[in-house]
Image 1: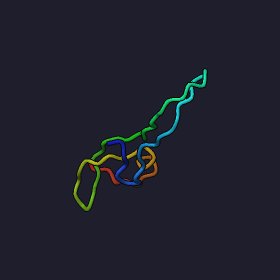
Image 2: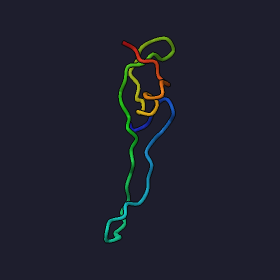
Image 3: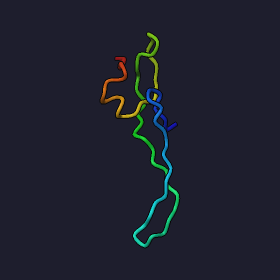
Amino acid sequence: MAKCNVCGKGVTFGIKLSHSHRRSNKAWKPNVKRVKAIVDGSPCHIYVCSRCLRSNRVERAV
């Protein structure tokens, strides 16, 4: 679910490194919100990241 329907931003994987240098896997998830937007002329709920909301890539439905 952590995927933006507008830009396609998804989960990024990497390695978490503690202070004692113990390594473990980690996933960074984007800040995704469920918003009501106009898609193809009709309002529906989609998942949009905060970057797309802030840059007005989505037309919000009231």
